[in-house]
Amino acid sequence: QVQLVESGGGLVQPGGSLRLSCVASGSIFDIYSMGWHRQAPGKERELVANMLKGGSTIHADSVKGRFTISRDTAKNTVYLQMNSLQPEDTAVYYCNADVLTIRFVREHYWGLGTQVTVSS
Image 1 (cartoon, rainbow, N blue to C red):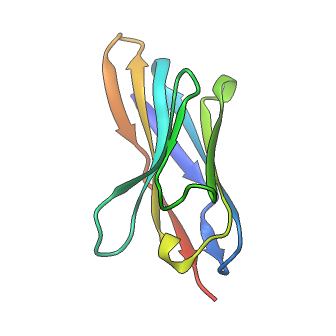
Image 2 (cartoon, helix red, strand yellow; image 1 turned 90 degrees about the vertical axis):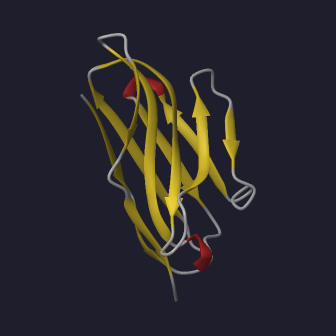
């Protein structure tokens, strides 16, 4: 079993910054990718940013230039630095990972999510 635990969410004023972290643990042999999605009330879950094993990244157009995904491979941790936050960034942010388990089975996992609220 693999667990993803997010942290770093909270309440921030417009224009402020937050840094989310996600640690993957458990029966992991290798990690193909880790990233972030978000879901606002009444909306579908959407991709925010993703990072592949080789280091390449993708960021949603809505966050380009404001959010940056990074990782610490040794710690199986991915980060999301969020700057210039706006009310429309308010959502539950979910970490996800595409892993190869120690049983050599490729599986996809989600964290429980962390709330980010941008409001004055």
